Image 1 (cartoon, rainbow, N blue to C red):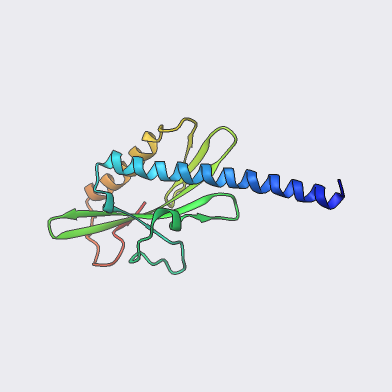
Image 2 (image 1 turned 30 degrees about the horizontal axis):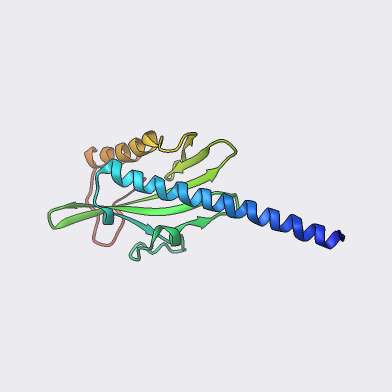
Length: 157
């Protein structure tokens, strides 16, 4: 085998590993957000996904697959919002989640504080969901709560 052919073979193997990694991460992320919707018992359209841009455009929602951004540090970033309704009024919670597959577990980082969770088993994200729920609940229960203006962000996790 020529040296060039050997390099081509190595490249194909590396590309195949990358494809498997990306598929595994995408599946995990999709399952994570489906689980969050179930955990919050929210309507499916309450959770929306946004492309990571500067400035951030939260008025345009995308399918989850199009909102996933692969960062140079190996994490997959997802910007999402949760629309909270009370009659005719609503508020929007904005959050960032970062996902990275390690050899035997996934790392999930939530929000500006980058609260980190290690998930070793599929469908064991309840602690992450509880963290998100509690952060939102605490925000609405605090004395200094001020309702957001239309088309702005009420709270960022």
